[in-house]
Image (cartoon, protein in one colour):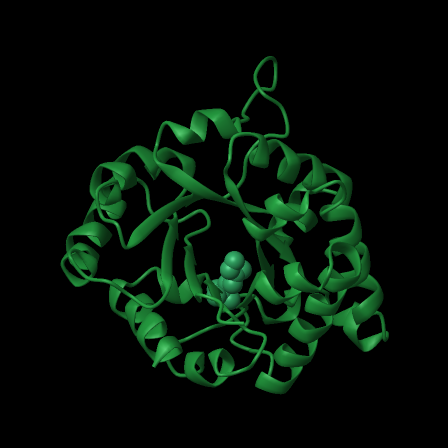
Amino acid sequence: MQRKPIFAANWKMNKGPSETEDFGKSFLPKVQHKTFPSDIVIAPPYVSLAKASELFGNVSSVALAAQNCSQFDSGAYTGEVSPMMLKEFYVHYVILGHSERRSIYGETDEVINAKVLKAREVNLRPIFCIGETLEEREGGKLEEVLRRQVTVGLKDVTEKDLIDTVIAYEPVWAIGTGVTASAEQAQEAHAFVRSLIGEQFGADAAARIRIQYGGSVKPGNAAELMACTDIDGALIGGASLEPSSFLSIIENGTA
Ligand SMILES: O=C(CO)COP(=O)(O)O
């Protein structure tokens, strides 16, 4: 099964509108009027989405993502943004269940599941993040944790909606630490996640779903990671903040 790789820049709480514009000035000429063998996604903070959609709205090779969304449609939810609101900014993807949302803001698998279902109601494509802590890995709980995150986080998702979802496997111990999972560790976890999708949604869905790797992906390690059978792109934090390093990852990862 040929799956199109997907490279997504998760800027986290970096780059307001003016820095987004600076990034765009340098990145746009490199991606405009070009076709890539992979999907390219940029996820700026909410307040920079208007600027990003102004810059990239007409660039067919680049799609926009939000870094979160509400599980509700509208109403008295101070500080929240609904999936429907995001659609006004040419947003096509939404990162859900990032480990920082889980650990710092207390998002549970159930809340993340509600967000996934709400995002699909308006046709946003979730980039659904999972991954174990170092303690869980060292305690022999890797498979148990991934199984729980996938089973609960994707509960009641239809097979069609699942195909429009991207999974991002991000071992928490590799995020922002400079320590990447080895290609073997990453491949093993990805193959396990794909098998979980097979159990829950069937073999066709398992063969088609894209599973990105995230955690200290850099231009220098992208090729080795992306060469693994079950790795279909990357979710990139720090190294996506510089246009040239984000582009190098995309190029090295699809070479
Ligand atoms: O959390 C990540 C992407 O969502 C990974 O971050 P780093 O690439 O900075 O390790």
